[in-house]
Amino acid sequence: MALLDSLFGKKQANKFVGVDIGSSSIKVVQLSKKKGVVSLDTFGEIALGPYTGKEIGQTVRLDTPQYGDALKDLLRESQVDATVAGLSIPLKSSLVFNMKMPKVSESKLDEMVRLEARRYIPVSIAEVSLDWSVIPNEDDTEEGDRFLNVMVVAIHKDTLNKYKEISQMANLDLRFLEIETFSTIRSVLRHDNNSVAVLDIGASVTKVYVVEYGIVQKSHVISVGSQNMIKSLETQRKLSAIGEDLNLVQGEELQKQIESSQTTPVDLDRILSETKQVILDYQKVHRKNIEEVILTGGGSILKGIMNHVVNALETEVVIADPFNKAETPAFLENTLRDAGPEFAVAIGLALRGLQ
Ligand SMILES: Nc1ncnc2c1ncn2[C@@H]1O[C@H](COP(=O)(O)OP(=O)(O)OP(=O)(O)O)[C@@H](O)[C@H]1O
Ligand SMILES: [Mg+2]
Image 1 (cartoon, rainbow, N blue to C red):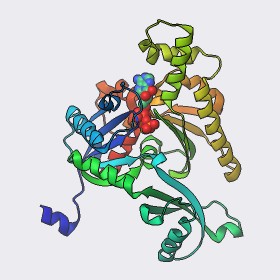
Image 2 (cartoon, rainbow, N blue to C red):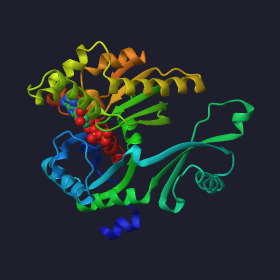
Image 3 (cartoon, rainbow, N blue to C red):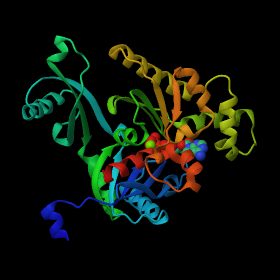
Image 4 (cartoon, rainbow, N blue to C red):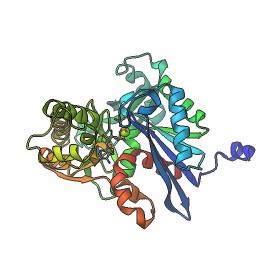
């Protein structure tokens, strides 16, 4: 079998697990494909806090072996039996930028992109792994016609090695590593999406992507996430209600508090004003309208935030439903719709694995 693999290239997997290592939890989704139909086998999540003496939901940084242990535990608990996997890399651990390049042949372009990219990368080029792709240019003037718009992705080799080690520790056959941006848009976009913004509110950071016909035009990281919102609301509560059960604040109470609040909580306000700016900049430069904002990430499950998002962005806002990219059992419909935003990255990875 191993010989056949090496002779004919790796066999197309018929079941595949996507692994998203976030700052508060790891998420896995296993999808399988039979007769061209993709279906959900299993999914699960494990909080990382307890691996380093912190609480569930807290954002933490672990050592590589601790991530390995957590992933092993999660794969076992979720009864994942696929051994081939794809892992995501956080956008904040990578550098993504656009460059204008002259129109030249593909091989020449590769050489030129690598040379030019040095100017954007703060560390030695030997320390990073580079990837690039041409993105469609809508500048149809003569000037625009002479240039190519190239998106470059640079990832530190230490980062790549860390994720490779984690997957080895969990006995996974790693087929690819992908920046979370691309996994997310694969699972949350609806086929008819023209120009949309995707807002991924994670536990530690928020990511904004502008996507046009499925191609990422812009990505932006905001260094505020749902844990910041929760912490500042907790502090407010501590000051106003000493002695109350603070655990309540984490759940329903918190959501009600955000929902009923006339003013947007300060951290959410920061997320929304930066997002608005990204959208406005894009609309101005590209002379196009963002038709819809797709909310994803665990932070978007905080029900109270929806009103604030709609008010601030003045655009149609929808919550991502990434599980609908696969066949799923009917009795899980509501559970999967609610949990979907947290699993968007893992689903996107598994979808790529089966393509
Ligand atoms: N059912 C829920 N109700 C309310 N909030 C929730 C719920 N589930 C998750 N969250 C919020 O989502 C957060 C986790 O989001 P997510 O899984 O997207 O973060 P992450 O991927 O670990 O973080 P990051 O992307 O910043 O590294 C939790 O910390 C919590 O604030
Ligand atoms: Mg995340």
